[in-house]
Amino acid sequence: MISNLWEALKQFVVALFQPFLWLVTGFTYLLSKCFDIVVLVIQILFGLFKLVGSVIAGVFNTFGQLLGFSGSTQYYYMPGAYQGGWNAVGDFLNQTGFNTIAVIMAVFIWLMTAYAIIKIAGGDK
Image 1 (cartoon, one colour):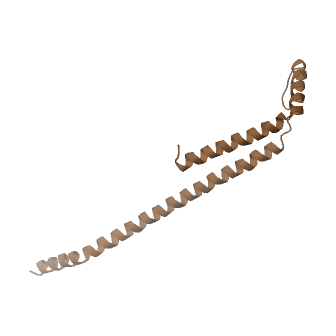
Image 2 (image 1 turned 90 degrees about the vertical axis):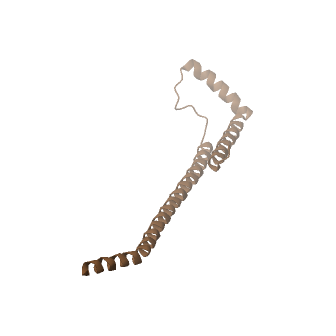
Image 3 (image 1 turned 60 degrees about the horizontal axis):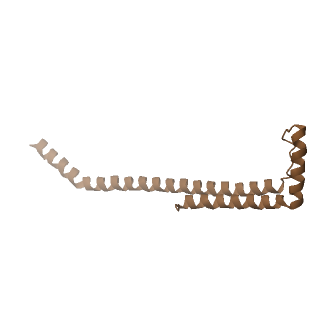
């Protein structure tokens, strides 16, 4: 009889506190998922900053290399017969201002590439 009373009391307490335990469990689950979302958002932001930083570094690197470009062939090896022809063509192109056009076209191509990357990253195709 006392054991039946004790079992009934336990069942009553369990039934009384079970919704509260479900509420606490649900709240902790909600908090854990909110923290997961915050972590993912921070990872996305760092990834975007990394992408933007890489693009900006690429722009500065490109312009830095274009400003330092001399058109020299010191690092290429050409046999003597071909070197004379190469020098003649290079001198002619230098006199016509073709180097300036080539630099402008290289910058234009780089900017179009950067624009295409931004469109792809933005979801436009």
